[in-house]
Image (cartoon, rainbow, N blue to C red; front, side):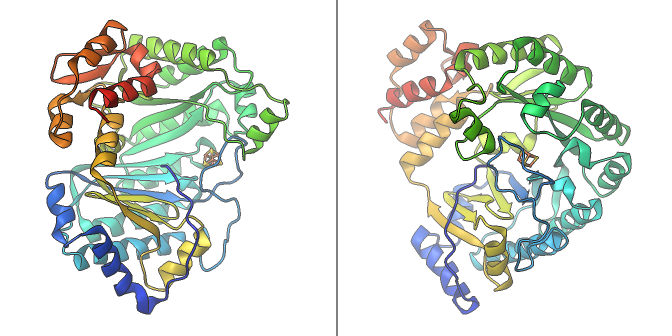
Length: 426
Ligand code: SF4
């Protein structure tokens, strides 16, 4: 999840109703507008757990190693706070006249959700079910750091209703794991996946390519090790170096090599080739799955469905409204215990932003970008000459109804997006 930092402006509980009303006025939400705008879209819940055992050197996520951040924002009390936020959000939906829909997917992310005791995760999930209910076969995933779970923990999750687990494997090579400051061993990943499979849970692993010093052979080892685990789904992300992280500082001082675009492109091609050969199919630029095993939750983000984000820094999408929780857990907890939505801000997406989002998200997917949909949304016609030129360059495939990036188009996705927006006159 993208985190947006928001400064904290104290809001007293007596201001809560006015704040919500003001936010609706500002958004022009006459209650049912949000609902009407997206009648048939699935409703998802993302829950952010902002705690980690230690901070990895490359990470700039909204996560903290302290066990207690003040104002009740502690690991021990976190489940209570998130339950409070979910209850508040459900009430907000009623106050706005929105008809709550059953949850189609839930994703516990972080941070490290599995730093919390399994009964806490199960209790939160149970409460979400009480508030909204679940669609039949709802997908319920938690991310897990491989060294924070064991067979017993995973069995408790399975008993409590979780049906999918996503392990932060990152690499199978000890040297690369050290560069990334990861604390787990490949043995933990192997055991975790085996325990998940024994409980009937669907499993996924995340990989990172492009760590400083990682050779193409080492990357190949990691890709093959991920395939050999027998998981249903694999995500592979290029390392993104943020200047404020420990790794960012080591790179800018010349003590670590900077990731190289050509090296990352070569590693992406290796991954795509090996995953495809092993029976995985890409369905989003960074995600590959066996048949029927896509992450429905993640696909929901790319299809721009509606979701509630709970926890510090989490984002929510309701129709054209975007809201984001206050980033720092202490400030977030303070707002929450004052009885108000712990939002750092809200905005309404303009028609032009909506179109841009639709193009960007659609061109990341193997199902492609619907030409009819963007033409309807924009009221314009796509310039077919631009599309033909992108096809000639080997960046796009199309059957006239949808635009799908080729392998080269995935590697040069920003360029493809820019050209398609040009073709719409954006
Ligand atoms: S475990 Fe994940 S969220 Fe936590 S510090 Fe490492 S990369 Fe960041």
